[in-house]
Length: 122
Image (cartoon, rainbow, N blue to C red; front, side, top):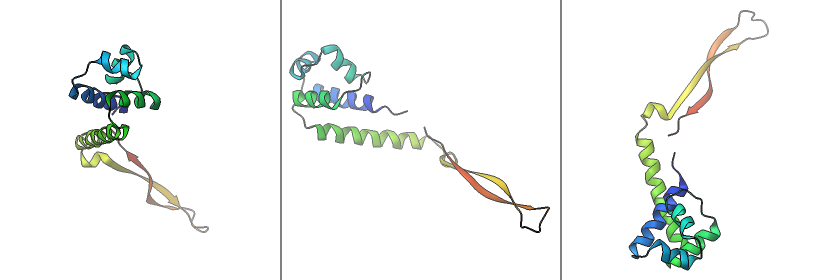
């Protein structure tokens, strides 16, 4: 399963490291505890929109840039997950015979009917 909080944490960590800044510096600027920021970066905690805004301000990066990078990483992760599935596993129709009876037909007959579609997710 792809965890959005983990992808977001990775992006925030890379942004911080590109700037050569420490967790302590960013946590002080964002007014969030060092431990909590560390948990966000490791994908162990979900960042609220307010906290994410404060971290982005502390890193002097637009939130839209961070979210775009997260979106790009999510797309790549989804493609990688789909590549591991064989084509036959993606959509598998389930056929079940359904009896059809006309008012005068007591014996009835059956025809296959697509009852459902199984979607296999990674």
